[in-house]
Image (cartoon, rainbow, N blue to C red; front, side, top):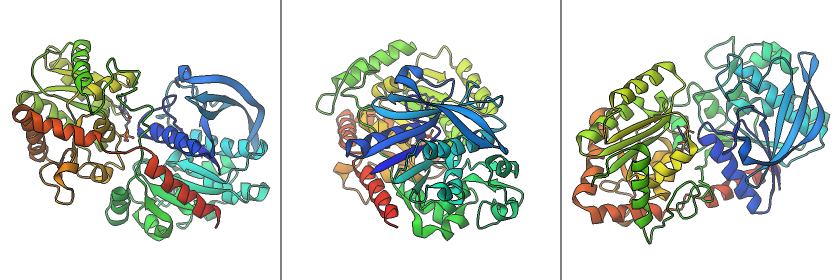
Length: 491
Ligand code: ADP
């Protein structure tokens, strides 16, 4: 099968969070199974060019219709760890992707509407006719809209679209100018509730809604989150749209790329290890402590890695730091905040805890350090308010780092409580779970985990190994996506 993924991220070259990991990991898996996979991405100035091999211009004269005129683009081609990627570079004063950031501009909807249009134009002009176009999140929600409203009539009538929602929170809300820019025009038609009209704001268009309405198949990234999207208010107002389109909606758990995330081969960690021999993990813990100037005592090390965002339960992350310290554990945090209030709060904590030999807060994005933390920590907390899938707990499991998670979204599909999970036999349990969003709930789970480490080290060790035995690779999810592609291809 010939599959083109259109996305705003691809790890490790463009990564703000799990989306990047998933786009890369899924592409690799599909290709290893014998499919032809190509990626179309924006050419950001701030991406990690050191992870691209053989970058060359592949299509120089791409003219993308825009506001009744056209913007000149160049398309570059290169390999990201074996994966063919096309990068679109517009040459215009809008300067869409040369701003030193991936997201966060006032005109983000314009930037990604343009990218979506340019990606389709590139497919059309370069005569690429994939069986399936796979789009991700709001940034590419307009791709199926434009494909089925415009490009279908210019020679792309056989293409089918799979649309994956990684996070319902960001939906791409825009006004009518998007229609004039992209050439979709007909305002009353697109503002209609059955098309792109936002479910709550009659004066707004919703990209993600467009993705849901127009795609041949829609999924979110875990079965439990798909259930939440149907039955709770977690989908930020898109519940009714999901309900109307539920015949083509499901949840497919994200996989993890075990070439990139594997303590047996990980290039970013000083000592390799596996579940037969965990000595390397001990040495990594020591290396992590040395790097972060933490004391080297017989204490468990608890970590948090993730975006510091309301979604991630920042109030509980904050509490977890102090609870761990009070309970005789060490704590390491690696996180970046886009919201200034949250950023300021964690900088304040960082300064306050600066001289504490049991605690280190690293604020910012650091891929290399993340690997060392997964390898060196004993436990990882994931106290999210909601979590479509969550990768940090899955990475933690692979690295023998016991997850302590809140029972929401994909966390429910991947972590099974050591003490209380009645549906999982004891020898298959792999972590700790709490449900309520208050400090006490978090404490009860952390207390059990830290207590096991302190008082029953052998039992803790067993739990670590049980977690490492899980297979959350792309094996199963890759098969499921292929089934979806096959299903929509023959419709
Ligand atoms: P989300 O997609 O909501 O950000 P996920 O748990 O699905 O959360 O994926 C997070 C990914 O981003 C993981 O690979 C994690 O290691 C990585 N990550 C998150 N924050 C940071 C950071 N500050 N530095 C390095 N890696 C990070």
